[in-house]
View (tube, rainbow, N blue to C red):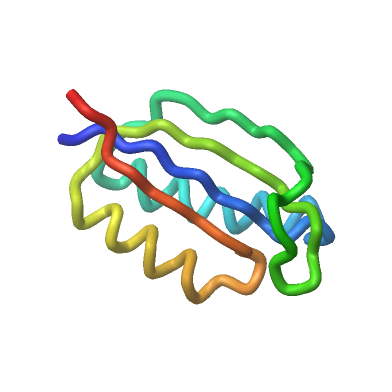
Amino acid sequence: MRKYEAVFIFVPNLEEEKRNQLFDRLKGVIEADGTINNVDEWGNRKLAYEIKDFTEGYYVIVNFESTPETVDELDRICKISDGMMRHMIIREDE
């Protein structure tokens, strides 16, 4: 198991229920093979630059331990989800 940190930026005008459904799906993928250590919801924050005509995004930071295959699946889900603006998953140093 490796340690990872993921930053998910959701579309700011996404309904809370839909955002929670998408985030629950992401959490389910992580918890299938690993464990979530910390979830930090920052809420709506100003973006450094405009993305898809949005100047804000809803930020969620997740620290977790899992396998590289889980990271690949998270990446795939984030790319095909309409409610996701940007995401980044990095491996933390030991």
